[in-house]
Length: 112
Length: 113
Picture 1 (cartoon, chains in turn blue, cyan):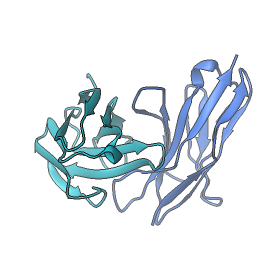
Picture 2: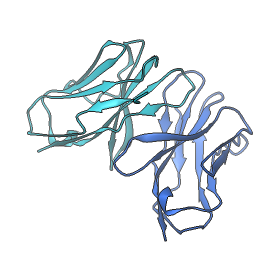
Picture 3: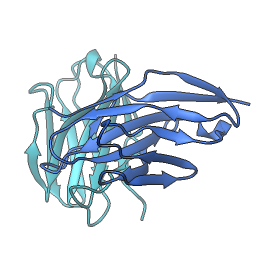
């Protein structure tokens, strides 16, 4: 079945550092890929998405490129802020259904 | 739009009691999902509905769990009887279509003592 694998956290960075959170997937067909963010005490929020190979999703300085050849969708940000501290989830839906399959989440902690 | 609304935000109950969680999806969203989040198992899909009809309930852990969607603007998740291992954060999410991103509610933190 479909699956999503994320790097384990926590990831601890200093403010203004470069961020990469790795995500790889296994899926049938041509999935759509998503990154969600969960701030403390809140539900998940859609951060960005990409629906086909080579698409780049971007939002709030975050970006991720759909790489079919490496089945990856790594999240990057050039300069993190303390306010980016949260848990980040990579997810996919395949074109045969409409259920999101989530990765295990990666906690990001940004220190001033 | 007020987003997906869940109630209550927090629920503490004794083992054996019935618990009902509520969700109001975004108007016009045809899909509704119930997820459970724990430290041990992460996010688990329990059940989802399309146009108020349950489509897949294979994630419901056991017969103690049941979910209904009597109309397009309301869904419930019931646990009867509740057990301490049911303690978790329960999220409701809705979506307008198969490929769009989901909108999640703020969750209900359930503690069964």
